[in-house]
Image (cartoon, rainbow, N blue to C red; front, side):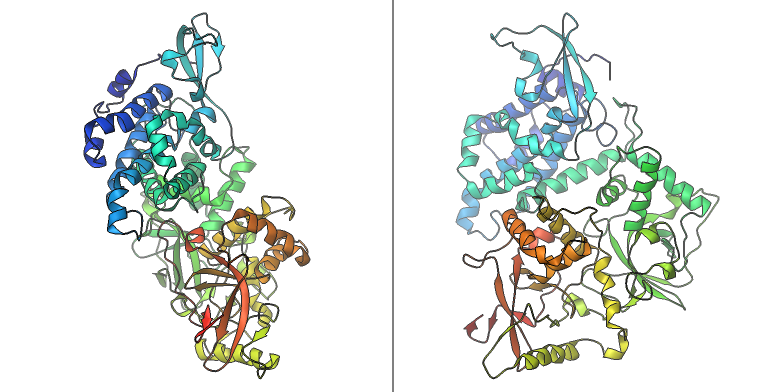
Amino acid sequence: MSQVLPILSAAKLFELCKIDSKFSELRTIAGFDTNIFNVLISEPLQQYAELVQLAPASEAHHHSGPGGLLKHTLDVTTLALKKRKGYQLPLGGSLTDIGKQRLLWTYAVFVGCLLHDIGKLSANTRLVAIHKSGKELPWTPSSGPLTNLVDKDGAKIPLEGYRIEFRKTPYRYHEHLALIHWGVLPKSGRTWLIEASHIMAELTAWLWGDKFESGTIGQIIEYADRESTAKNLQVPPDHRFSNVIPAIDRYLKLLRQWIQDGAIRINTNGGMGWVDEHGHLYLVCRSLAEKLIQECNSLGLKNLPQDPVRVYDILQEHGYALSTEDGKAIWTISVETGTYHHQFTCLKFESRRLIPSSRELKPLDGVIKFVAPGEQASAKIIRESAAQANEQPLQNVTTGGENEDIEQTPEPEMGVEAAAITSENSSEKIDNNISESEISEVHNEVIQETAEPLDTVSNNQEDVAPVKTSVSIIKNLEYEAPETAQKFLSWLQRGLFEKTILINNPDAEVHIVEDGIFLLAPAIFKTFLRLHGVPEEKHKNLSKRFANLRKHIRCNDLNIHPYWVSSSNRAAKINGWLLPFNVIYENDYPIPKPNKFIKKKLGGDDG
């Protein structure tokens, strides 16, 4: 942007942005004494305002007009502090601790809101200072407010104003820069927080962008950020600094065109979309996102998101992809007609917003049902593949069986009981009187007790294998690269969310136990490597890198936890890694019920 903007004081900025400079609502919500509020909250907000000036929160997304970053930050702060009042923190703490730490937790939430987007001014949204002489000067928030910019000798620099410049940086790079601007806070506030290591751990994780470790603070602020973003996106901006066409506009244009031209097959076996009797259009989420990404790339629009999850977010944030009751974008539905019965993970739209008023999409001649978390329909699971995204007939897609329609043993309430564990994961026995063959017999016995009769399952055991191949594959995986462990974790989380990785199932390598998420090892690491074309014997390299992430729960000084898989009179020991629930199931996402046949202890003895 070439327009030169004036450098304004905090008071003038609040006036232009229609923000109460006394922060009356925040004072009431926060609950601090007046003098303390002024020092810890009011003064940092004023300094923040003079740092960000009229910068937008984004180039062509939410709060993209003048003052957008300031407005968004104040909005997120207000929403988050309101949300915080509904929590007794620390979770599970005594009444004494909750009372003593009440204001400290509140202040940590405030700081997380204040700094959550400030890194953008050192990353993709830059303020370029303009000297009175017309010379442009580099500037970041670390240089100090433009209202009082000084040179190396301490003399004030005469400025004409500044302009906004947008730069291309990695997605969420700004989050890694937030803590650089820690100095916006008063020394007393910084000292107060640093003394509370358990609170600082959550706060710094949030500011770094680590949602898995940001705990309750992260949950509260993420909720507020999402609400503020969604609310703003419902209102057309009066003015944008950039002429860039927003991603949502491009996605909607493509989506509407595809539906109109029939490029997206609807209510057809092997298609991508399904319409219910209420006029809701369900589009298979992964296939849709990949199709949008591929089309945008082919048009040379490679600056748009490349991550399917980010595509879901954009469609949801703008109110097109409808949210589930728990605020998620992904719906799991069961589609049944007289000739087929499938289950999909989808985005849900109001069809009237995607088609002309003169045209109406006819509902499916069958039944579409929402599958609630924790349920598993007795249906054929349709895997989302590149071929499906390109609308090729399903019967032409092969991943090891005859086709992609694989009959799957149902999982009652996601609590499918004992698993058929491979011998490499279960070699120990209860006593010397139980042989290896008896251990295998135990597993089969438990499966028979809990699953459907075997004649309801595909006769070809290999038909089960493609379930794991459906998880998105990372091209050119380098198993020795440090980031491979994080890629493994992302693969695991996405697979569990989209139900493309089995859980609590006779063939599963992932199980829910009372203490967390149990990963059979080394089987789960071998599966990840095998699917990505890397020799399985490299699993030790992967497990070492995964240990370095420090996401797991250690067993004394070991990474491996022993558990018991048992039936009424037989048992065998299995080994694996244990992850805290919030590493995978964040933001109150429903956690499947534990596998009741896998326990830490067997009888009265420690496993």
